[in-house]
Length: 229
Ligand code: C5P
Image 1 (cartoon, rainbow, N blue to C red):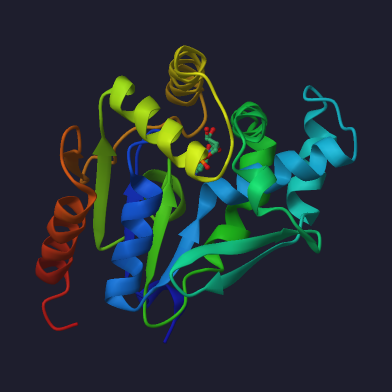
Image 2 (cartoon, rainbow, N blue to C red; image 1 turned 45 degrees about the horizontal axis):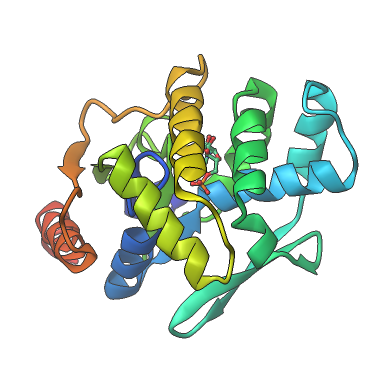
């Protein structure tokens, strides 16, 4: 099958909107591949910090993003392990420091350009669920179904808090909310690929909605988009 004929479902939205959990569950139910594009930005940021590249050195950061090797190792019933340049870095990638670095370098057009092909390579039969900020607007503009998830900032901070606590990481709530708002503002206002719904995206507000209900809703939309799947 030509890569462009492989069906793609994009799920975009701000941090903590439930994208990751929902996208993974939807991919599993459909039996499709899954792209966690945020992990690629986080991995590029982590590799840059290992190489001690300054956050204003756009050329070096772009080279680092182009060269970084990211490998996902699926684990049944658990988040995949992520290897960055061969080093297992799953826990480090999820930290707020890594998220903030990712967000800073993601504002650079050269870094975004360096990651385009890496993201499109995930489009393989039988299909792809792609999770990110610009999946529906920039990376897969021809996707057959585009979903944009939102939730209030308070609820997103609470979800992130719970997630981090489950991973044994201690964070304080006001700082988390402040970081989320700062990251949202930067991601939404940057001139390249800002977080915004594609014109043809379906908007779903997940505030107060259990994850399972959102997953069912997305699967129902997928059944309509691909009736013969
Ligand atoms: O989704 P996640 O929180 O892992 O993403 C980390 C950061 O990477 C985001 O704050 C955003 O700046 C950037 N990102 C992006 N485009 C994507 C995915 C993530 O700019 N498609």
